[in-house]
Amino acid sequence: MGTLEDSIQIKATPEKVFKWLVHIEENCRVWHPDHIDLRWIKGKPFEEGSTLYFEEYLHGKLHKGKFLCSRVEPDRKIEYRPLFPMSIICPKGSFIIKPKGECCIFTATTYLRVGPLFSRLAKNNIEAIRKHIKEEGGNLKRLLERG
Image (cartoon, rainbow, N blue to C red):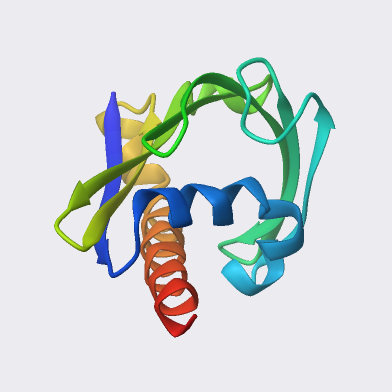
């Protein structure tokens, strides 16, 4: 299994970061220009068992899917599972928020079921996902530190 991970220090409290994520429906387009739609189709924002529908561009192609919130520790951790068919390649992901003085460290992780052959064949797609995750972290930092 491969792991794509990006961490960034944000001058904000974990509570502020989590609150921003809870309002992801309103914030989706400012978070990343490739986000088209994010909306809760079951449950409340980032509660265990809730389902989020998304549409976004990756490597120039529109992707649509659903994520199930599998574990939530308010102000600290969100774990999610993509639903079928995306779950075949991407079984899980997470957002971790760790306090660090007056700041916090935000880490986004995506796990991929890829072997050496698929990694070579899908190298551009995997790099596009890696770039997207990094841009999301940088954008989140900019948005939260700007006030």
